[in-house]
Image (cartoon, rainbow, N blue to C red; front, side, top):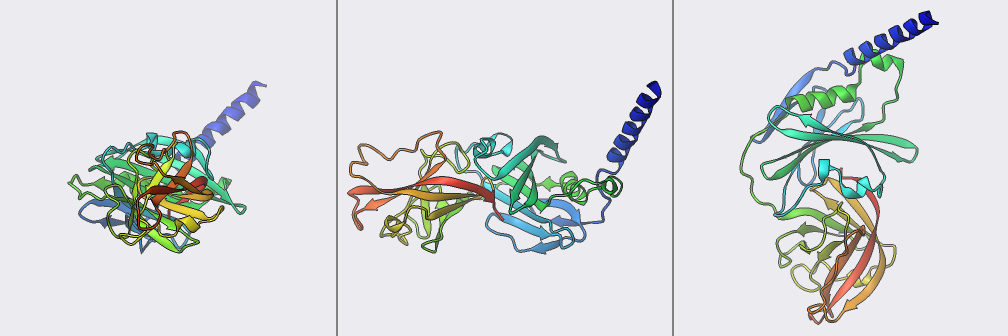
Length: 317
């Protein structure tokens, strides 16, 4: 019996040693640098066009990995989620399967690395995020790649995704600097009406934008998000929200959490005639979105309100 125990222990030690030695593949790297951020990255990555709030983006044609590097200025009073994991994901109100969250010691900064899985259409995709809070902004590097199935050979050759993540993380440097204020923290898109507007935190009286009520919640928080838009002035972003039907989608791309929040209309036509005395409320604990505009068109006699419920949280890429 003792012989079998010793053999088992010996094999376990060998496997552990192999895992520690070959946990990530050895890769050739290049260097990315601008006047704000720098890091090493795998030499086979190809630079691609980034989206809003993204500084740069990459694609690995071999593995299918997509990587986005983003920076979003924090609005005044904004408190980033604990460990940079949105509350609604912690509450399992999304397709994200939370895997882990750990402190990340970087060259000049402290950060967090979070790992998720998303199972969709019988396909599993993994997401690894690296977050840093500095310069009054939130920096994120998000890796999206197909789920890597475990096999014995992977112990020897190492994980390419882990090697890529480590190459970036271990070389990441963010220069201390003063950034310009950016009042835009996301965008709102209504597919049935084909409109997209900036979500602002400073004013409603501006073209091409809507305004997040400061007393409401941010996307990802456990509470109601409130968005107000003009009905007839300043590009009239909410000119037709009274025509939205139950089931219509309203999508918020949030640059602070780098997530897409998909809502569906469940009630339209709530009119608050005494909104100055009894303001529109944004309850805590509800994963909802409230759209508000003036009513009737051209007047400010009442508030027209559309109620939406959260149906999914998706990657922003």
